[in-house]
Length: 80
Image 1 (cartoon, one colour):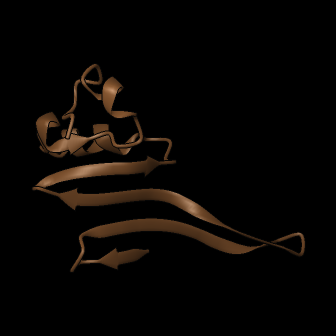
Image 2 (cartoon, rainbow, N blue to C red):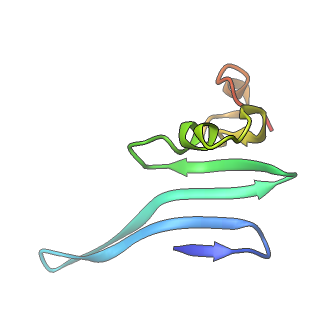
Image 3 (cartoon, rainbow, N blue to C red):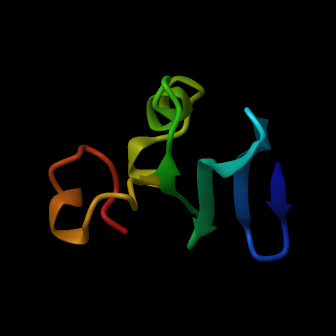
């Protein structure tokens, strides 16, 4: 887990070895910008945006940043 509370950047990474090969990558990347949660990458099976909504975060406070800006208005979430 990577928590940058000063810059409001948060990541969940996987790191390890498998069959004598090194592997690493990002599972989840969130930023907080202008009081909104920007989901930069969501590699989870549960879709973190829906989990946040279930926890009471309004959809207008969540930006699906992994979608290009022109598509965001059709997601039901904030555009930026």
